[in-house]
Amino acid sequence: MSLLTVDGLSKQFGGLKAVNDVSFVIEPGRVHSIIGPNGAGKTTLLNLLNGIYAPSEGRIAFDGHTLNGAPPHEFAAAGIARTFQNLQIFFNMSALENVLVGGHLRARRGLAGALLRLPGRVADERAYRDAALELMRFVGVEAYAAAPADALPYGALKRLEIARALAARPRLLLLDEPAAGLNPTETAAIDELIKRLVASGITVILVEHNMRLVMGVSDHIVVLDYGKKLAEGTAAEVRADARVIEAYLGAAQAEA
Image (cartoon, rainbow, N blue to C red; front, side, top):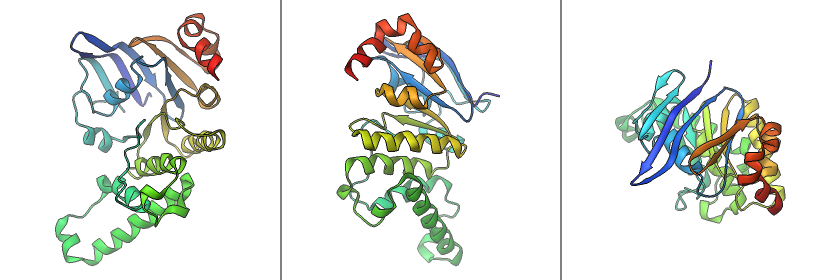
């Protein structure tokens, strides 16, 4: 059974259709990449897949349940989390506090328990902290736990945002250009992290311009061009598609 089904999805802004009648299926336990030139509609599509935008047309179904028009917190509660191309970090908090924020959706006790410091609440907070530290270890930023977020290097901030998304315990993780601005060593670390995410049972949708990374980790690729689906298939199939080479891969590989 598919995890996510996108059927005839469109998003219109005035006279512009940023996403135009796009359909695909996301299978669990795989890396699915979305690629295309700048302006192809990739980030708009991600914004549809986590509720930031409501679709103008079409259907989004996650685990068989339609989520059209639902707000972002309902997508998150269903099991979809994401990172952003432009870092969305709370720079006035510590690195650990940023990860703890990501787990608030799963908190079980209310305001009264927090104010009164009830034993159950204290135990929960200890468990949340331990879980957050484990996620920081998983992504490789545990050394920065007590540091203010604004003191972290850029590559560590990218992985910190992934840890915060994982704190919501997603089944599907949307990664929006996780390797943007990273050097080759940092990009290799992201490559390894994505593989470990899938090995841990999390399905990944990756938007990324680094074709070496995309071709190395992807089980399935969807190519967008001017908001429409141009092609889809395995890395080998997409790499050999003449339409994709003409629209995107030829230029991208020349820049690599």
